[in-house]
Length: 436
Image 1 (spheres, rainbow, N blue to C red):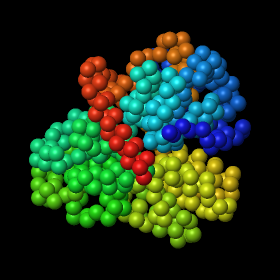
Image 2 (image 1 turned 180 degrees about the horizontal axis):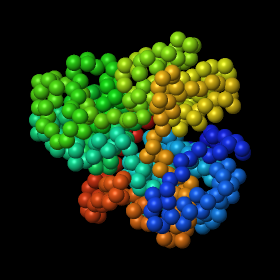
Image 3 (image 1 turned 180 degrees about the vertical axis):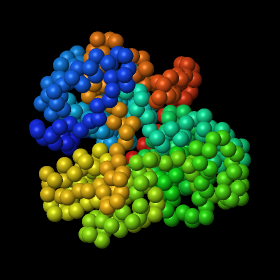
Image 4 (image 1 turned 45 degrees about the horizontal axis):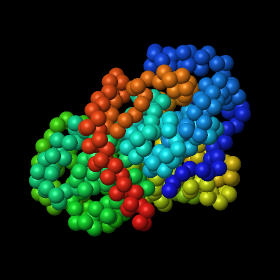
C-alpha cells in the first residue's frame, strides 16, 4: 500500500515571494472570479500574506470535511503550489503514487487534485464508488496527451489490431486519457509510468506480444534501449500533428511494422524535448553529475549519468552528499524546488538547460501552472458550500477541451465499461511493479 506520509519536503522562506504567474481575471471560471479578485488585490505574494488569505477558505473546508478531505499535487506544479498543498497537510508525488491515493485510502471521500486532468482521471479510475475527485482547474491539460487524444489514436489502433489481432497489445503511459487506458485493458495490455515502463514493457515482451506504446516516443525509445531491443525492430508512427493517417504511411511501410517488436506513437513532451547531448557534455566537463528524465531524447539520455522519474530525481537530491553538484534535466518548477532543497543540504543543483546561449533554461510545464492559489481556495470553499462547478468534478472517461472547457462525458453504462478495462490495465501495472 502506498500512502504518502513523509515529512515535509519543501521549505517556505518567509521573505521569498511565492513564484506564481498572475492570470488576468477573465481567464477564470465565473465561480472562481471572486477569489481571483481578492488574490490579485493582495499587496504582495509573500507566504505570510498568501497564507493569511488562503486560511480564510482552506481552514473552514478542512474543519467541514475533516479526515474525509485529501489534497494532492504533482511535483511539477508551478507557483510553488506544492508548498501550499503540503502546508495544508496534502501530499505531493509523481503520477504513479498519485494514482494510488484514493484506492489505498478509502476513508478519503473528497479528493482535490492540483495537477493536470489525466492525473485526476487516473485517481478517479481507481477510486471507490463513494469517493469524488475534483480538479482545481479543468483547463490544466498536458501537451503530450493533446497529441494522443482518443479520436487520434483509436483509428490507428483499429488498423493495427485488424492486421495483428491478438498478437498486438497496448502499453499506455500514465499521460493518457482513461479512454486510452481502456484500450490498453481491452488488448490485454497495461498502463506504465516513467518509473516502471521497463518493467511493464518487459512483462509484455515475456508474453510474446507486439507492443503499441502510446503516447511518448522518447520514453518508448529509452525503454527499448534499456531493455536491449534491436533498434531495427522499433517503428515510429507518423506524427499525429499531420492529421489522420494510414499505418502504411509509417516510414518503411508495412514491412517496418511487421518486423517491429514495439511500435511508437509520435507524441512527446515539450518540456523534455529541449535537452541535448551538448547540454549534458557541458555540465559533465565541469564536474557535474547529470540526471535526466526519460521523456527526453535518447541521445541526451545516453550521455547522462542516470535517468529516472521525478521521484528518482528528487531522491537523488535528497541523498546526495554535501558538496555534490547535480544538473537535472526535467521540468523547471521541479528543478527550482530541488535547488532550494539541495541548498539546505549543501548540494548544488542546476537545471540542465541552464547553459550559455539557450533561452529556454528552466522551462516549466505551463499547463500545470494553471492551478494557482485562487483555484485552490475557490475549489475548497465552493465544495464546503455545496456549490462546486460540475466541470471541476472528474469522472473516468471524461474528455475536456482545455481551451473551451467543453466536456464529453460518457453515460453510466459506457463509463462502467471503460472503468472495467482501464482499471484492469492499471491493476496489471500495479501487479507487475509489486512483483518486482
